[in-house]
Image (cartoon, rainbow, N blue to C red):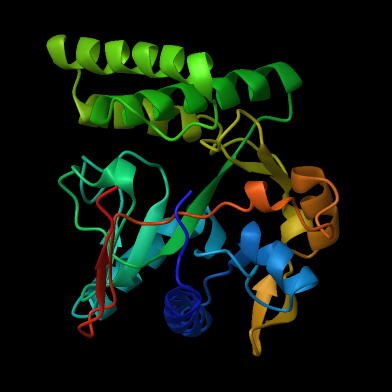
Length: 288
């Protein structure tokens, strides 16, 4: 993994913090509930802010609040900020929403050739209702995960993987074959997105207290009960009081295990970009 210069990484973190502060003000003004989680959740408890090597911030919202949020963001903040999602650009191969300043650029190597405008961003994760029935829930989780992976492979033959050696080569061969096959068969990104979204929304009208980010790295990886998330707990992150899950310790333990233990240096990963532009004349490109 390539490494940031410490000053550049810190500037990126503080840029993302400013985006989050703007986002928080918008959500407060419009009564849109959200919580900060994942890496920033570890960071707030273990470091009082960013994990030192981390380079992104993730927030999660219930699906029912996403439509209102996107409408507010587009109607009131589109001059300076951009909303990027598969709804806005069908070539975007994820089910998250990225919100960031238009003047900036942040492109990871795997996305360098995609026809999307990528910015330094806040990553917004939609949480969908899932069935209380174990069998139905597992089927929904695997279905949404499957269609999401096809969305990715439709756009790129070499997604991000952690395998090494022959296993990595074999995996990339299979991914490349699927990528080429979908292009030959004229399977459209729009069709794949609709299939994935349908799986995510399958139980939106069911009375359930369980929600999930259904297109995480592994099926069923991010399942929550609503009372684990809300009402939020306000904790100080980089000197700013922000909403985190009500039962953040429980959720972090479930997701990461002993999150207070620093991982080995070789496991301290981030999203080192191919292109980073702060929009103030400071720009970096990595051609390796």
